[in-house]
Image (cartoon, rainbow, N blue to C red; front, side, top):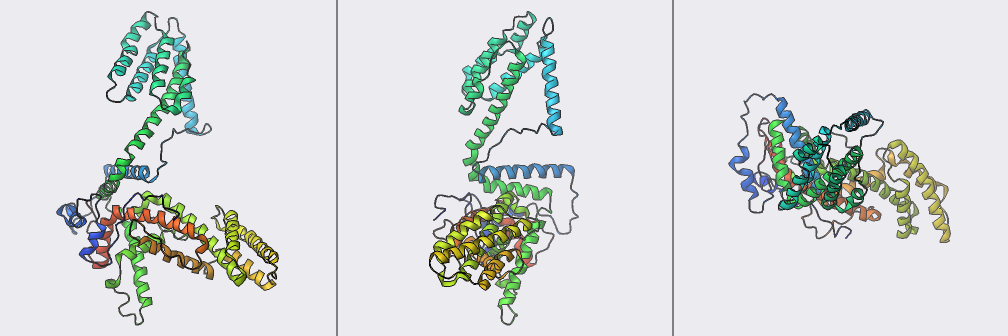
Length: 511
């Protein structure tokens, strides 16, 4: 399988098909194996912050807004560190032509020019330079690990501010010696990637240039230290991420009671769609729309599949904001895959029995290349026009090479017309492929983890099998981890929608 070496960053916890108390068993999942999900969901602590329905709404203060912002920032950062293995921090370089960049450049130039003028006085004024030496000392000490007492003592002795100030009063400061020592310590503490940067540093009598260069490399070293710390703590954060995110979101919910509004609307829409589907499936329509026949698992999975619709422009639910960028990337990829599958199916239908799997694979490669990165409707229509001509040419070329008659005028017109019209609504082939993609993804989301097999691919998706398995696998990882974190919140929303609990009840969860 194409994803045999990939690992999800969350365990799967699915909703039960039954309602009532069993709903909380599967949604109120805990990241700890020693704690029962049912106990976590039904414990007294899970409702300790719930306020009476009759309680007046509490006004949101500025402190609440700031606290919510901090919690959301921490939640997003922690999730990104774990979910993105390549996550790292970079030094922000402001564009020189931007207002911020110009202000920064002017301020820095003024500072270093002032320092240079002070050092050129007779006698030189060393006070600001000494403060910079003291700052360098503190930065070097921050790089040391516990136990390096000897080096710590040595740095404090050599870069003793009081001693340097006494030497400056007698004009006896040995700048080259101090610079050489600082550069030598930096070479011992820096990451291998900074070896060349440290070697380029030169200790000379030009104090200003030496200090500027040293501070530049120290900034790089500080960023290296931050990224090393992130890398070191990623495994520990990964083990605790589900509980951490759940707690942080609960804190956000306590400060902003409306933080689940969009999530509630999203689930409510999926529930209405499920009830309508039951009505449509029922011959009499008497019992088809009953909530007793609705599976919360399938309703929630249907909602997640809907997020991948290209035309789904509703506000994103609050509970998926941490993976919003990844979902958008998968949505764009899925849109490309759908177009490729449509072109392949149209070509295969027009060619009929003379179509071969090898040629359809060639059609797929051509389509992928010509439609790469195209999402805007106008550009897509133009690309489809060129693609239809290219596919028509390749079909006739393939038929000629095999000694078969070329496409007739009518068949060629049908082939090019159906490809060109793929952007139109209610396109029969598009609707068919879209329906089968939804069925496949819905089935994938219901698979138990670890995945021992992949769902059977519906007809028409065979040419894009690898791409569909890739999307299904990665999206199911996102969804399953999301259920693990936000399952208790979803459970309370379903309780309100399915069992008509008071709408004023506060949705909350404890791990």
